[in-house]
Length: 138
Image (cartoon, rainbow, N blue to C red; front, side):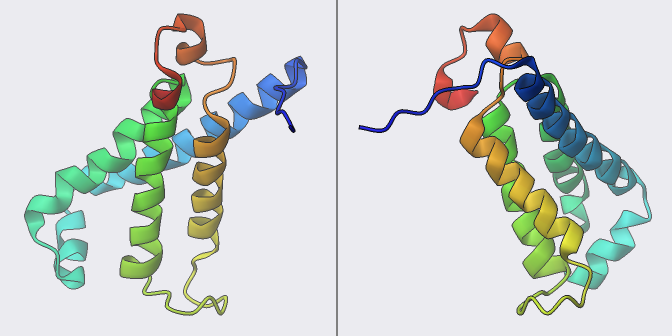
């Protein structure tokens, strides 16, 4: 039976931490503009009610922060995966991946979130430090 072993190298830990920090920071930065009143016009153009402004903004901001600190990492990355699927298929209307429509960053962020869902928070995280969080919630 094949067994997966976590690498013990500090470089592996730092690289994993860097991926989490980068993706979390991107989502935090993208969410800040969604708290502004101008985002309401964008929602109206999409046909979404204005009441969705804060849930959409918080759906990027809170998981972004949690990714950066390494708490509830898998759940946060899964939520951000749903957000990115919405961005790709609802906002950008990417029915075919032809390279047009600017979905490249969205697909890259989606892939990064899926990687985090699979590999978890890593050893440079609040979850690892506390070790009291059940593995499936990390």
